[in-house]
Image (cartoon, rainbow, N blue to C red; front, side):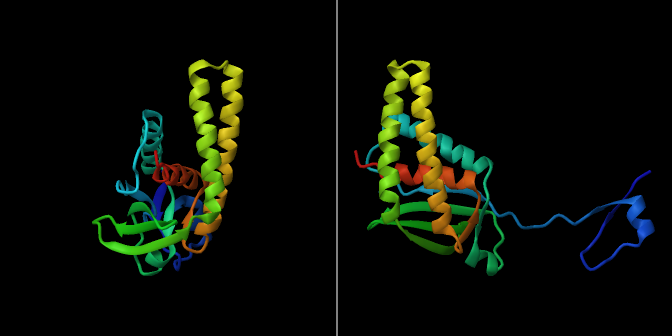
Length: 188
Protein backbone atom coordinates (compact mmCIF):
# COMPACT_ATOMS: atom_id res chain seq x y z
CA UNK A 1 0.00 0.00 0.00
CA UNK A 2 1.24 3.49 -0.89
CA UNK A 3 0.74 6.30 1.56
CA UNK A 4 0.06 9.73 0.02
CA UNK A 5 1.09 12.70 2.13
CA UNK A 6 0.97 16.40 1.45
CA UNK A 7 4.22 18.04 2.40
CA UNK A 8 4.98 21.69 2.85
CA UNK A 9 8.37 23.06 1.91
CA UNK A 10 9.32 23.60 5.56
CA UNK A 11 8.47 20.05 6.62
CA UNK A 12 11.43 17.73 5.93
CA UNK A 13 10.71 14.00 5.69
CA UNK A 14 12.63 11.33 7.48
CA UNK A 15 14.39 8.74 5.25
CA UNK A 16 11.82 6.12 6.28
CA UNK A 17 8.90 8.37 5.37
CA UNK A 18 10.51 9.19 2.01
CA UNK A 19 10.70 5.49 1.10
CA UNK A 20 7.08 4.71 1.93
CA UNK A 21 5.20 7.64 0.47
CA UNK A 22 4.61 9.65 -2.65
CA UNK A 23 5.21 13.26 -1.77
CA UNK A 24 2.96 15.90 -3.24
CA UNK A 25 2.84 19.61 -2.74
CA UNK A 26 -0.62 21.03 -2.15
CA UNK A 27 -2.24 22.32 -5.31
CA UNK A 28 -1.35 25.95 -5.83
CA UNK A 29 -4.09 28.46 -6.34
CA UNK A 30 -1.93 30.27 -8.89
CA UNK A 31 -3.24 30.03 -12.44
CA UNK A 32 -1.02 32.19 -14.69
CA UNK A 33 -2.98 31.98 -17.92
CA UNK A 34 -5.39 33.89 -20.11
CA UNK A 35 -8.99 32.72 -19.85
CA UNK A 36 -10.55 35.38 -22.10
CA UNK A 37 -9.15 37.55 -24.85
CA UNK A 38 -10.78 40.51 -26.53
CA UNK A 39 -9.63 42.47 -29.55
CA UNK A 40 -10.56 46.11 -29.76
CA UNK A 41 -13.12 45.99 -32.56
CA UNK A 42 -12.70 49.72 -33.19
CA UNK A 43 -9.09 49.01 -34.18
CA UNK A 44 -10.07 46.35 -36.73
CA UNK A 45 -11.48 48.03 -39.82
CA UNK A 46 -11.67 45.06 -42.17
CA UNK A 47 -10.90 41.34 -42.38
CA UNK A 48 -11.65 38.66 -44.93
CA UNK A 49 -12.75 35.07 -44.27
CA UNK A 50 -9.16 33.77 -44.18
CA UNK A 51 -8.09 36.36 -41.59
CA UNK A 52 -11.25 35.76 -39.56
CA UNK A 53 -10.44 32.04 -39.50
CA UNK A 54 -6.85 32.77 -38.36
CA UNK A 55 -8.25 35.00 -35.60
CA UNK A 56 -10.69 32.33 -34.40
CA UNK A 57 -8.02 29.62 -34.39
CA UNK A 58 -5.48 31.82 -32.59
CA UNK A 59 -7.99 32.76 -29.88
CA UNK A 60 -9.20 29.17 -29.44
CA UNK A 61 -5.63 27.79 -29.24
CA UNK A 62 -4.55 30.60 -26.93
CA UNK A 63 -7.40 29.99 -24.48
CA UNK A 64 -6.82 26.23 -24.57
CA UNK A 65 -3.15 26.43 -23.65
CA UNK A 66 -1.08 29.42 -22.64
CA UNK A 67 1.27 30.85 -20.07
CA UNK A 68 0.71 34.47 -19.16
CA UNK A 69 2.13 35.93 -15.96
CA UNK A 70 2.14 39.76 -15.86
CA UNK A 71 4.91 40.81 -13.47
CA UNK A 72 3.29 43.76 -11.66
CA UNK A 73 -0.06 42.02 -11.19
CA UNK A 74 1.68 38.85 -10.02
CA UNK A 75 3.83 40.75 -7.52
CA UNK A 76 0.68 42.49 -6.21
CA UNK A 77 -0.80 39.06 -5.42
CA UNK A 78 -2.97 38.54 -8.50
CA UNK A 79 -1.94 35.07 -9.61
CA UNK A 80 -4.44 34.56 -12.42
CA UNK A 81 -6.32 33.61 -14.37
CA UNK A 82 -6.46 36.77 -16.49
CA UNK A 83 -8.62 38.48 -19.06
CA UNK A 84 -6.70 40.31 -21.79
CA UNK A 85 -7.79 43.06 -24.16
CA UNK A 86 -5.56 44.00 -27.10
CA UNK A 87 -5.78 47.31 -28.95
CA UNK A 88 -3.55 49.47 -31.13
CA UNK A 89 -3.45 53.19 -30.48
CA UNK A 90 -1.07 55.69 -32.05
CA UNK A 91 1.44 53.02 -33.11
CA UNK A 92 1.46 51.32 -29.73
CA UNK A 93 0.08 48.00 -28.60
CA UNK A 94 -2.11 48.28 -25.52
CA UNK A 95 -2.53 45.19 -23.37
CA UNK A 96 -5.16 45.60 -20.68
CA UNK A 97 -4.78 42.86 -18.10
CA UNK A 98 -7.75 42.19 -15.83
CA UNK A 99 -8.57 39.54 -13.26
CA UNK A 100 -11.14 36.84 -14.00
CA UNK A 101 -13.95 39.16 -12.83
CA UNK A 102 -12.90 41.91 -15.23
CA UNK A 103 -11.22 44.22 -12.69
CA UNK A 104 -8.37 46.03 -14.46
CA UNK A 105 -5.02 45.07 -12.90
CA UNK A 106 -2.57 46.78 -15.21
CA UNK A 107 -2.12 48.21 -18.67
CA UNK A 108 0.99 47.49 -20.68
CA UNK A 109 2.05 49.63 -23.62
CA UNK A 110 4.51 48.37 -26.22
CA UNK A 111 5.88 50.42 -29.08
CA UNK A 112 5.18 48.65 -32.35
CA UNK A 113 7.95 50.22 -34.45
CA UNK A 114 10.06 47.07 -34.36
CA UNK A 115 7.03 45.00 -35.43
CA UNK A 116 6.25 46.94 -38.63
CA UNK A 117 8.51 44.89 -40.84
CA UNK A 118 7.52 41.44 -39.44
CA UNK A 119 3.83 42.37 -39.71
CA UNK A 120 4.28 43.55 -43.30
CA UNK A 121 6.23 40.38 -44.18
CA UNK A 122 3.66 38.18 -42.44
CA UNK A 123 0.78 39.77 -44.37
CA UNK A 124 2.63 39.39 -47.67
CA UNK A 125 3.47 35.76 -47.11
CA UNK A 126 -0.02 34.96 -45.80
CA UNK A 127 -1.48 36.50 -48.95
CA UNK A 128 0.81 34.27 -51.05
CA UNK A 129 -0.15 31.28 -48.92
CA UNK A 130 -3.90 31.86 -49.33
CA UNK A 131 -3.48 32.26 -53.09
CA UNK A 132 -1.31 29.14 -53.29
CA UNK A 133 -3.87 27.04 -51.43
CA UNK A 134 -6.30 27.67 -54.27
CA UNK A 135 -4.04 26.85 -57.22
CA UNK A 136 -0.47 25.75 -56.35
CA UNK A 137 1.05 22.30 -56.03
CA UNK A 138 1.50 20.69 -52.64
CA UNK A 139 5.26 21.31 -52.80
CA UNK A 140 4.75 25.03 -53.52
CA UNK A 141 2.25 25.34 -50.68
CA UNK A 142 4.65 23.60 -48.30
CA UNK A 143 7.49 25.95 -49.27
CA UNK A 144 5.35 29.03 -48.69
CA UNK A 145 4.03 27.60 -45.43
CA UNK A 146 7.58 27.00 -44.16
CA UNK A 147 8.46 30.61 -44.96
CA UNK A 148 5.27 31.77 -43.23
CA UNK A 149 6.13 29.79 -40.10
CA UNK A 150 9.66 31.22 -40.16
CA UNK A 151 8.40 34.82 -40.23
CA UNK A 152 5.85 33.97 -37.53
CA UNK A 153 8.51 32.38 -35.31
CA UNK A 154 10.87 35.37 -35.65
CA UNK A 155 8.05 37.75 -34.75
CA UNK A 156 7.16 35.61 -31.72
CA UNK A 157 10.78 35.80 -30.55
CA UNK A 158 10.67 39.58 -30.95
CA UNK A 159 7.46 39.73 -28.90
CA UNK A 160 9.07 37.63 -26.17
CA UNK A 161 11.96 40.13 -26.08
CA UNK A 162 9.57 43.10 -25.87
CA UNK A 163 7.58 41.46 -23.06
CA UNK A 164 10.67 40.55 -21.03
CA UNK A 165 10.41 41.95 -17.52
CA UNK A 166 6.74 42.80 -18.07
CA UNK A 167 5.06 39.46 -18.78
CA UNK A 168 6.39 35.94 -18.43
CA UNK A 169 5.06 33.87 -21.30
CA UNK A 170 6.11 31.01 -23.56
CA UNK A 171 6.86 30.73 -27.26
CA UNK A 172 3.49 29.20 -28.25
CA UNK A 173 1.59 31.97 -26.46
CA UNK A 174 3.77 34.63 -28.10
CA UNK A 175 3.06 33.13 -31.55
CA UNK A 176 -0.69 33.28 -30.99
CA UNK A 177 -0.51 36.80 -29.58
CA UNK A 178 1.47 37.89 -32.67
CA UNK A 179 -1.29 36.51 -34.90
CA UNK A 180 -3.81 38.64 -33.01
CA UNK A 181 -1.55 41.69 -33.18
CA UNK A 182 -1.53 41.24 -36.97
CA UNK A 183 -5.33 41.08 -37.03
CA UNK A 184 -5.37 44.45 -35.25
CA UNK A 185 -3.25 45.92 -38.06
CA UNK A 186 -5.56 45.07 -40.94
CA UNK A 187 -6.63 48.29 -42.58
CA UNK A 188 -8.46 46.99 -45.65
